[in-house]
Image (cartoon, rainbow, N blue to C red; front, side):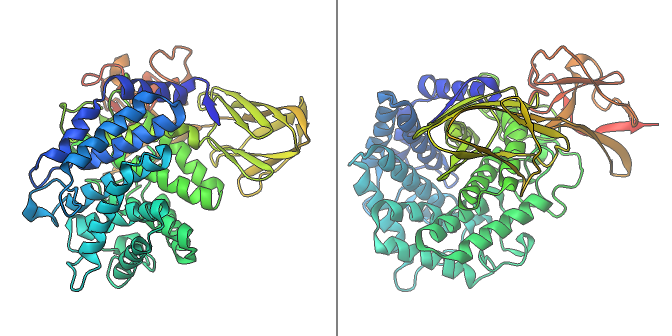
Length: 541
């Protein structure tokens, strides 16, 4: 069990939980299954994600309200499910267009997750009817082409993920057959998800859809021991990480991977860059790979995205999340009520699952996955972690264990200076595959990890003009106009930003010449719509 004890992540976690219980109405999601939307109706997707959110909140909070919220949605599904099990909620003649199968699949996923966490028997026949619909549609003789779908064939193929979960819940062999059919069909096409040579040569470059597909690939590999799946998903992750992830911790333009995707460039929000759904999916894919193979690189990716894009996408009140974030301009956190809230529900779900990915334990090894003030307890082990990371680099652990354990402490790739001590005695340790291994006997111990947070200046050229960006440890910095200097004010390229004590409405505050810099997560957030920011600052001299 993990408990958050404040800090940046603890604050976000509590805000989202409060808004889940007080602001989002289950009846709104229940009602989507009794209407026929136009051909671009995406509401059942969000209802499915909301049902997953109910499952998580009930599992963690043991709050009857979360259970009743989920039950309300299930009642709506019972009333609205079509005779053949379809939950796409488009016009009858549109069962195979646009978001139909995508909607259906996320509702199926939500039903499975609610059943897994609550054992609610009313969910099980709905799971079977919804999963059987997909099998009846695509496993029959002369089925429709599952790749004949929007977003370059991904909308139907993404059902692989929900069907692996349906198999996990029911152990129905037909659902396993469906998953194999999807993978085999893709492999025989130019959406060859296992044998691809580059993400840019796959039929689809769509960000979140492809990530969802690879989450399904990983779960299929786990369930059926198919090593090809692990290798392919890891290779996909590596190429995205190397070529697409920007200094904000996110990627995509118009929701697509792009050539030279992480090269310095200026992107306004109007270009639809850095979709929050992609940031959430990127963390989920990194987690799925980490739990298969606990490499430090996956945790580094999570850290970067979580403390930059995700922290920056959450509105101050925790009531909504930005859909896209440019790397300059204004931050737009709120959409009109009822309009396309996908980032809200993916973001809410991510923050609800925070406590599930802060610590990892194997037989005799414990890894603090993301440094944050927490208390971790397991059978015979209790560890209290005190830190103000990523603002400061000291991370203190108070360990009580009934057995000898090893504490694996990740040294981030940006950290060149560090120290570690046990009981005040310094240890001479070097990282092995990104971790310091601190061996602790049974009993109590105080461990202190001190990471020196470097301030890095990164000159670059954009459209033939010189710019510079700054990073402080895990945090990307940005010029924020709330302090007075207008956007695109130049800075001396040799300027060395100095830390400022005043950090009102920000995690960190630096000044470079006359320019004020704050962390990207805080930039443009004090007075949204008025304040502007940029992570690339023009230089002079």
